[in-house]
Length: 289
Image 1 (cartoon, rainbow, N blue to C red):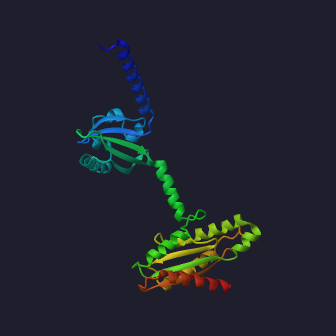
Image 2: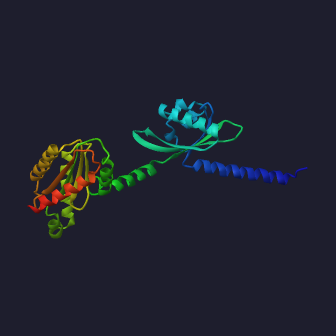
Image 3: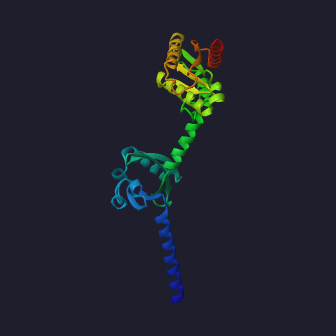
């Protein structure tokens, strides 16, 4: 016969474990869903009802199509079927528009038991991680001061466009005049104002499909797909004219730029050669001033 003390101890341990489990579930940041093979929500644990779109109690026993957007339902159905068929964990990302803001989530699907067709879905909010990674990706290809692309990106694009059929492709290289004098005599803060002003002028001139980059302290490069030599020269004239008309009231030395351009007309797959030619032309024009 089992002693009362032993039974009492088992019950107390069970109560403690239940309390611990409840505390864990009530404090987790993830949303836990039990979904059957037909797509019905059998159980829900969450402290973040707003990320479910509807209240957890209202969602219980409903089909996922009644709770989630159509594009997500189709994706989830396919992943559930694959998890049930293979028994492997399926992980995928998705996003939802919640209160006018796009939020990003990671869903992990796990088959609960071999003999059952229930799925545990663990939903995690990864918005902060996603935005942090996007920021890192942005900074890796953009110049922080101007928001333009950087040298790393332009070098990648030059290599990629070597095999492009969007001919002709023109390249314009620009170098700000007397920026060293500005930095030496008025400080780098003033020099940064020159660089920002120059980038703003360039942004206003070029199309969305054109690639503008700051490739050095005072140097800029522009890639122009499907732009012939005549058009590139006209664009250079526009740039020079825009710099001449720039408001120089806050600048101790008038803003100006030296330019060089080159155009690849044939499929010789060597855009790097034309990049160097445009750079050479720029230094030639700079030396003549």
